[in-house]
Image (cartoon, rainbow, N blue to C red; front, side, top):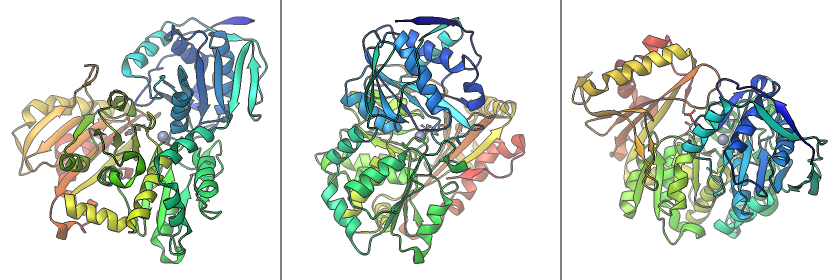
Length: 545
Ligand code: G1P
Ligand code: ZN
């Protein structure tokens, strides 16, 4: 095989964040940048010889170019075979499903998730292990170390392959299989849910759903599963063709960026009763009822509380897990079920060990990510089918299901405020000040409220004992309300500060109060404690979800 060694240099800042390395396309596409990072991954996989690698991405700008580069490098690195999604497409959960089903050594997923795409947008890359899940911090730290002293990358001299044609081909001497990106994943989902019942629901004259793929990767998956397999009428899936720039939009399924869907469900003339959307790489979800948005933390709790209605989970849940800033609604369900509820740092990689060890069956994050042990990633369409299965069995609209849940467990009123693109120095000042205040905060009284505890979340993995520090500042009040501050690890411009607010409301008479209103005093307290507006000059957050 004709392997060429190319001299390269360390690029600064190739440190993977919450979910892989995310940077501007302009940075990623400069000569050697992607190559240095990929070689750093391969150099940390000493056992890769002859093994199978899965490769695909969310179809964003630069996806196709990056795939051909990685194929040439994988051949030079000695992989035995690469399974690549047709046209370079694999949603994040589908990649996880393929890795697991085909017993692959690992996989490379090209995505910057919900970040905007296009030539001026973002690109991203992450490595998943043989369990189908994101590599842990130990691995990503080692990759970062390698990027700092790399001097050469290797590739074979070979032409681009035709990614449009299914079947076997070769790059250098290495076989490449171009696979159907949907088949394995769709079969897996069909094995979990009651497709017959969901099909009946979709055929009911009074029921109409819309799935907004946001011009992102889930279009082909949703067409195949919802329309072709489950018989939803053509047109159920909108914005269903993946575009390199996501149609100029921001492929994040939240009330701001999926405002069209929310408006359609709020308009009685649309006749819609169920709405859903997913993000750039298909792992996030949003569920919308008639004039009613389900908050992601509530969604996770509702899924757990209704597990007995779903064929795959009817026999019971081993345990559940949520990221630290996710609301404690899930904990209440777990307590009633008598199962463990684990609290992990933000990012799906922390759920991997719990799922592998059989300690958790369902996991989720407040950032619109839910999933189960069927793969090792969060899974947007899985969540949509889970909800459809619940609605089909309970024969109740989405809003009623959530309101009944609140009546039974109480409502964990919740909001996340994002301050995007702050100057890095301002955000650093804010957190430095906050961390300094922590010891004195506990037990003190701020704005008339006693603070019960204040700390910087530190996680010790119950399976392998690994320690992850500085995972978000928590301020817990005497009545159990929580204020959490975190710095985003996925942004590519400046710093994004997230403020998470949560208050428990047991009184059903007060469940009608909009979250914004119910959390006003908590937001004011957060400002007293952290001075976000004062330090950053931002009076209001950019996104509230
Ligand atoms: C965000 C979310 C986090 C999620 C990640 C990847 O990370 O908050 O829950 O796992 O995207 O989708 P952040 O930007 O907050 O670091
Ligand atoms: Zn995503």
